[in-house]
Image 1 (tube, rainbow, N blue to C red):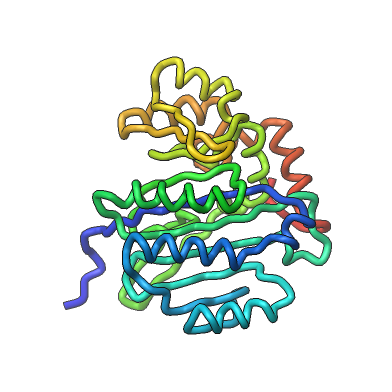
Image 2 (cartoon, one colour):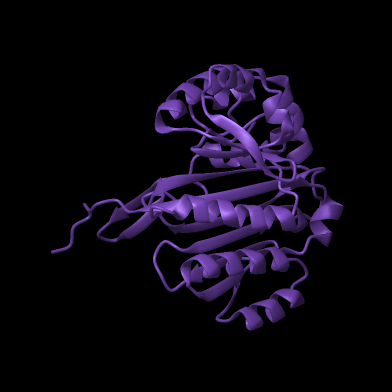
Length: 279
């Protein structure tokens, strides 16, 4: 008998972000980044990609066909890679090249999902180091996510007998159009593993937490530092960061972030011309 109630499986998610202008976006080698990510996943998990999709319209079944096809596209804006095993996936975006009249700033993003295991966070940290050596990412995080949430947007998936639907809310778009605030000490949210830059260490709220020994910061790769938090630390950090307006995406801190002048400034720099984007 079919049941919609089952034990939740969890995946370990790595997300890395970099702020770019249109010249950086157009010159960026997304295929090289994707290849490095696939190599890292394959090395740790002995899995092979089975399906490649570019710009949400074209699909290929092999890396060779995908690279040939992607090189014929005007721009590689989005790419999704699926594997033959549940829990594994890769998502890449370079959304700035998708605009006829691009805003001043946009972002590069790569997200990777693997099934949660005892060593999956350490595997992801090793992969993140490899990717950061190739591309100067400015922010990222690793966390555990139940499979009833979308892997890279953390939106609720509703499963029913008739199929699945995704609850889309305002927070995802808020993040997209304010992401450049990661250069000014703001975070998407706070996670078990946070890859942060110098501007985050200058954030008084984060400084307050570190003075109270909430989590441990150490060098990671390039300009990035790693801030690791225990389960107990996460609650304390979330309370302080939400109250200070340091969280762009999390529901407990979003409105305080948006009320700050800097949020409006970043929104203007990341919003396309004549677009109705949430403020």
